Structure formats: C-alpha cells, structure tokens
Image (cartoon, rainbow, N blue to C red; front, side, top):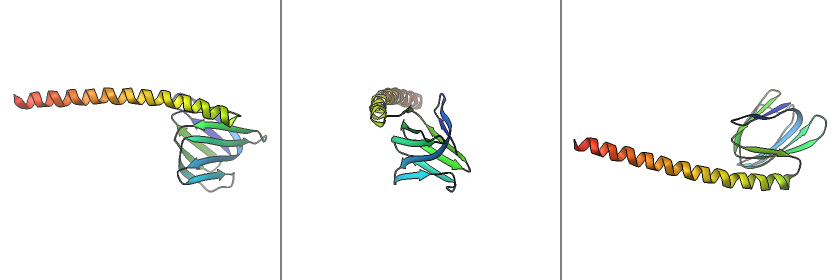
Length: 128
C-alpha cells in the first residue's frame, strides 16, 4: 500500500507500507494490503504504520479523515508529528494542541466581535 499523509501546508508522509493502525471513534482498526476500501474519521492520538522494510513508525495526529481506495491510503488532517517514540510524540502533540486552542479562542473572539458589529449596523439601518 502507499500511505500519504496530507497536512494543509505539506505532504508529511508518502511511503510504501505493509500495515496502518489507527483509531476511530468506535475503536482501533488495522489496514493491510488486501483490506476492502474503507473510510474513517480519525480521533486525535497515535497512528502507527509499518514500512515495507519492516520499520515501525508513529504519527501523533490531530483528528482527520482516512480513505483507503485500492492500494492507496490517504489521510488528511490539520496537524501531525512524525517519529519513532510514542511518548515524545504525545508530548509534542499536547504542546501543539494548546497552541491551536489559543488560536481557536482568538478566532472565536474576533468572529464574535464581527457578528456584534454586523448586528449593530443592521439595527442602525432598520431605525432609518
């Protein structure tokens, strides 16, 4: 199988693999070359894959979508960290998660101000 992990800004992984193990909301699953075509929403955590050479690798992932179609496995997500040590990846994803939470909080604040401004302007126009 060919595994390709896509982030908004880059292709993080593009490698031939013999196995992909990931977690969805209803639990863990394993994909191997003869597995039927498959689509799943992934939860934040660890994704494990084994290259054709037998090297086991891990990705610390944000939530994402996995699509297996024939020999192609495509995963799209907002953020991921690649490495060989699950504990290091867990710490790195937690640090990135807090950064994303702060960004999301600021974005929600700006959106709330924009909505309030539009509502105020709408009320002003109705009074005329």
